[in-house]
Image (tube, rainbow, N blue to C red):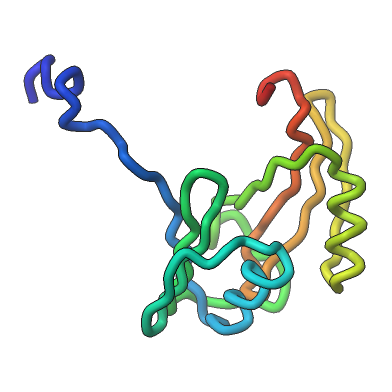
Length: 132
């Protein structure tokens, strides 16, 4: 690749997304669509694509579920949602039946929870100086 390849737009990203392979497909779609309220972009057989900020979260079949949080060696990714108020967002999720563990760190506040497949998710305070 020449030095000009990136400069002329050949690698310009026009959209970004995350593909989440699930075993409990219907439950995960309901979780992200109805509990987290991510808007549906489009749906096809065994695939649902949701808006995720200015990107997308594509939920597909073909994953492996656990009844608790998957260990890092099975899923080293955490799906993070930056929110203005972690405490308020956590309380809302808890009212919808989602267990949320709020943790305070020197770099910010998170609210950790899992989806129906055991994938790690977090709320993060959007007002942290790194994300302002």
